[in-house]
Length: 225
Ligand code: ADE
Image (cartoon, helix red, strand yellow):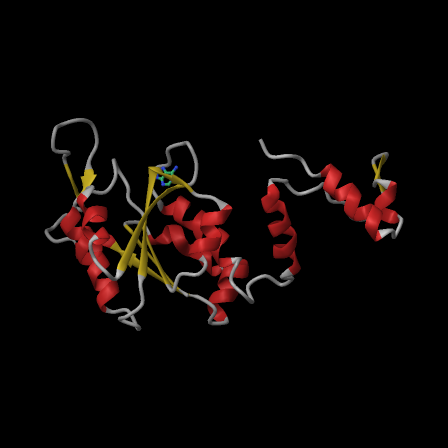
């Protein structure tokens, strides 16, 4: 899977070189490229935004600069036939869920558009919706407003990449999570020591009775609201 992000703050994406995602990159499971939107801006100030038509507070990111950045990525794609899932991060988007992560984990190329200010000119999404190589998605990671889409993109990348074969050390973790899709949150977990500050691990977990343990875990999983 190829993952590209366009941003005016490439440094935001440095954590992707750590831990399991960094390992997935070094093992060739994913390829990550970060593109600096300012490289496509002109003039002394390399400005990427302008005042909103219709007035109002803040600035809006210009469609021409975004399209130059997106086109450069699609034109230089190693496989010119693969579909690009263009993900526009916005608090007005669809709330990102585990189901979305699973669907997007099938993608060959995810392109994250991390906007800043009051957002990206609406014509960008509109234009790429009509391009056969692109599927356009608008996603929010929750009902709050961030300073930009970078952190939201990292959240989505982590949720998607851990679903790819070979990324998790123990793929059974995914199996247990998929059971939870029936609407249960994970059960409480314990490790050594068996008594800590007067608090004991539930006896059933020390019993060795796998049937009882499975039943206890199911009962102890909290129902999602
Ligand atoms: N940009 C600003 N806030 C956001 C959010 N909650 N989700 C995705 N992108 C955003």
